[in-house]
Structure formats: C-alpha cells, structure tokens
Amino acid sequence: MSDDLPPGAAAVLKSAAFKAGAVVCGIADAAAFDAPAGQRPADLLPGARSVVVVGGAQPRVGDWAATSRAVLETMGTTERIQSVGRRLAQLIESEYGYYALFVPPGTVSGDRPFLSLMRAAELAGVGTRSLAGPVLNREHGFLYWSAVITTAPFETDQPEVESACPAEPCREMWARQGTTPCLEVCPASRGGCLEGRLENGRAVRTFYDAPRCHTRVHTHWIGGFQKVLEETLNEPDKDKRKMLLYGDFFTRTLWAVTYSSTNIAQCFECMRVCPAAHPRKELR
Amino acid sequence: MMGIFRLDPEVYRRHKDEVLQLANSFQRIDRRGLSDAEIAEKLGLSERVVTEIRCVAERDCYSLDEWEKAIEFKDRACREWAALALKRPDLKRDADG
Image 1 (cartoon, helix red, strand yellow):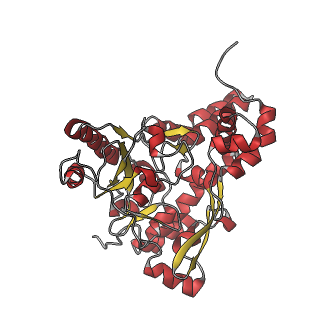
Image 2: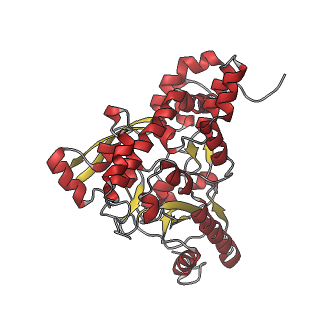
C-alpha cells in the first residue's frame, strides 16, 4: 500500500497481536467507514489511513454454562483485549513512526461509542454481524474487540463475504418453527429486544430495542446507578432511602462501576444460545 | 451562576421522541441512525442540545422496573440454559420454583 512501511509490516503487526493474546487481527481501510460525520476514524485522528482491529478475550466454556447470571455479568470484561490494542498502538508509533490512536472503550456521549468497533471488525474482515447484533468470527464466534486508528498505510483486509450467522441449526429451527434461538430467547414482542427473520438463508434483523438491551447488558452499570440515584433523591422517607442505597442492586452496581475504564457486558442470553457464538464443548 | 450545561426540561419534553426516533435508538431495518449534528440540522437545534436530549432520553426510556425485569430475565434464561447444557433439568425447576 505504501513505500513508507517496510515490506510485511502488516504481517509483523498481526504477529505481535497474536503474541499479545489476540485470537484474530485484521486491518480496515479508514476511508471505508460509512458512518455519519463525527463517527469516522479520521474524525478522531486526522489523516487516518487504517484501523487495526483485534478480537479475543472471549468467555470460557465454563462461563457459558454457569448457573448464575452474576458470573457472566462479572467475567464479561473488555480489559484483556484492550491491553492488546494499547500495545499495538505503542508498537506502531515506536517501530513505524506513525500516529496511532487507541480507540477508548468508553463512550463519547451518552451510550454512543467513539467508533463502532463492530463496524471496524466487519470492515477488517474478522467478523460479520449476527441477527442478535454482536459481530461473530466464523472460527471463534463471540469475541471482544479493540481497535487502533493510525496514519500508517497498512495493507488492508477485505470484509468477509460469508456470514457466521445464521448457523445451520438456526436455519433448521427457522424452517421448523419460524424462529431462531436468539429471537426465541429475547423477542421484542414478549418484552425482549429483537425482531428478525431468515430470508433466503440470510439473517435479517428488523427491529432492535437498544434502550431495553441497555438495561440488560448494563444492568449494574451507569444507567442502573443513575436510576437508583434518581429514585433515592425522589424518596422522602429516610429509611426507604437507606434500603435503596444499601440494597443488593445498588451495591452490585457500585462494584461494577468501580471497574473504571472497563466496559463490562452483563447480558449474554442471545449469545449464550447462539450456535455460532461459542463452542458447545462437552467438558467434564 | 455558571454550572454545567443544563438542558431546559421543556425543550427535552418537546423533542425527546423525535430525537430518539432519528437517532434510531429503536432500530428499524430501513433506517440509518442520524448523528447529533444531522438531527440538529433537521430540527433546527444546536448539536449540543441534541446530544443532551439524546443522552437524557436514552436513560429515560424505561423506568427502574425494567432493570429489575432484566435481572429476572437473565436469572431465568441462565438457569434454563444451564439445565440444557449441563443436562440438569433440576436447575430449570429451581428457576420455575
């Protein structure tokens, strides 16, 4: 892509990513982001040429089988893959002499991310969007993502042509029952978040209730904190205020939010039932 | 008095639904969510005001009850899955009971 970078620079970068713990690594063309102005790589780093995406740090088989929701609520953190992203940013600047901006894991305003990591993963060819929403890698399923925007003109990868979703068992279920595991577990029509269908073997999501999904994915997080705080401020009775503030919900929320700078996912039900999201290994 | 930027509650009430719809918070297949700047242009508001309306509205969509429902949903779904994956029907009965 450019004479400025040594031959094989992208391969060296990917090798460093794998060594640091990533299970997949791809590079997207920064100009390919079809997001509104303000949400593109060059809006964060002027002169951005490519976006390096790493995925990994997925839950273990035991986590998926846990009988307590609180396990996955606690284990689902992005911090391990973030450290890989940070390391790559450092490598790009020190080895190649280009600007490298680690995309922060937080939000730029409200619930809106600095950059869509899901779109970045799609464009970098390391995953495809699922009916439920999350991007799935064809080999590894559900992963956490981190990205680095850089002015380095790395050789870029192409988006995948074939999607990991729907998996064969989902196609069979659709033919049999007119639904899929993710739609069945979280249907918008019955108080959940999702609506969709399979059309010519392709998954088509027709509706997604993001605010409701937020109450599930971030139950004990910023939103839950704000809600209880509001309820407490509106509560005139001193003893009732105490029940709200010292109770399990608020306490658990404080445990979660004090994990600063880490995005803790707290609902996995659409992914737990997804045959493409994780291995159904029979362990002892 | 200076303080932080505070949205006028009346402006919020007037534009909340429209902003949520344009931001595609309740996502429909045939619609791309607009950025705050795009919404601002459409509604004749400043981008800062739209950002504030969106941030407050994202929290304001559901009452605290929905957070409790989220816990109940996850408890039930998690136990049903464990019963299936671990071949332990008794775990599902715990959830039902």
